[in-house]
Amino acid sequence: MTADSAERRHPRADALRHAVDVLQLCLLGQTRRGVLGYASSSTAAAGRRTRWKALPRAFARVWQPEAATAPASEWILTREGDGWALRRQGEELGAPAYFTTAVPVDDQNEAFDWAADVTPDANAKAIRYVGPPPA
Image (cartoon, rainbow, N blue to C red):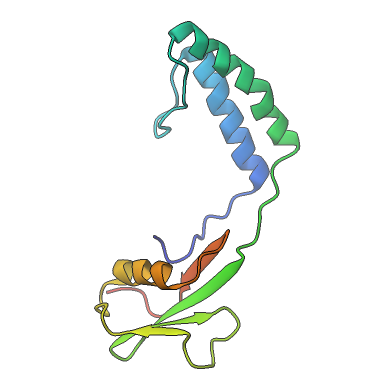
């Protein structure tokens, strides 16, 4: 889990990248480097037909991209004293909603795992770290 994604792309750019990936898969039978692939049917011929059927839908998303949804639950993770504190976004000055000393203060990844476990489930959840960069 990363602290905060500084790489926020536009939904239309993501849709265009996806459409180009599908087109490349249809024409060349392979994806670009870094793309794992797409689900295909049991037979090769049926898989090719399925890929070509997905192409119009992929290009339609370029003109009408899916709206980006804001996280339903936003949390701020901070290193405090000998432990980790977790507060709701906007309530940074109050007492933490969750606090633990069970996670080492030098293990930011484990702190994010702990934060994801203790916060209530939501359709979308964002956890951001605020503080000095890890050593």
